[in-house]
Image (tube, rainbow, N blue to C red; front, side, top):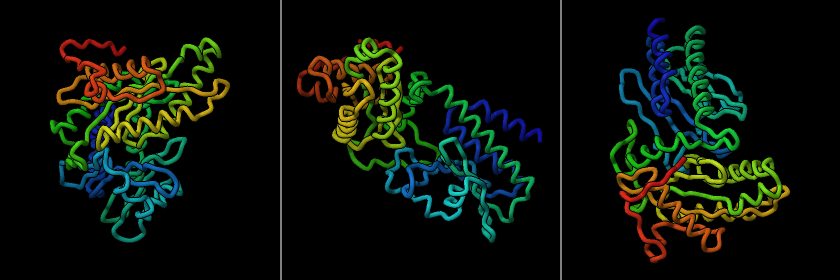
Length: 345
């Protein structure tokens, strides 16, 4: 019991989500007294009949290396939840389910007010005792509560997008994985396209001060909230969306090419322009983006994208501009990293 308490205390001190996921599956196996021989944490992505399984952490007893799917795995290669009858049953019933015959697989859903977001699947040689199942469910509840606390500290209170203080860590992880400095545990590096990379986009609402001055800050807040919803519906599950403050938003996204990044941002721009915001009517956004470079810094990448936003605003607004494209066309002079000093706060 002392070992379990110490493990739970260590779990509560983790702030990196990948480390927290890995610690969960390790703890489920180590605390089961040999009853659990495998543990898999699955994230349920998508909606309805197109819900799919992304493995966030998997471990077999006796192993030390935790494996997982790469976050940017092609959506179409992920298996459907319906491909796994027990997983589907756990989602449908929103409670733990177990196989009646060997192999004795069990699945416990992780729930929020919006439904099932994940699953813990574990394998055993014999059905778990009631006491052992209670222990596993207690560990999982602790894990889910810790995630809730992380979300509370890492998300913008109004829009529920990620906030500024979480950006640097995600940025450096993205650059490390993009340029080969670091691989996820058990991960396999895959570049489906030679130009694949990570892009940073900065989005700014056009004439937002006019909205606040004309309609008041409550309506302005509603515009921000609705824009955040449009962003969530426009990007993929692994794209990271931030509100940096005021009317400024940031996107970190992995794409096969600059063209694909531009197309994704253009789709968002068009969706925002076509949306009828209550009382306000039409809102437009100006967007600038830049690819992340080797040994990049948050301020350097943000500064490049911000220059592209400024160019968009100075040349008509309501458009998407690529920093590298503007440099290539001669419309911008490429910035020197040492001379760039951008305040992100």
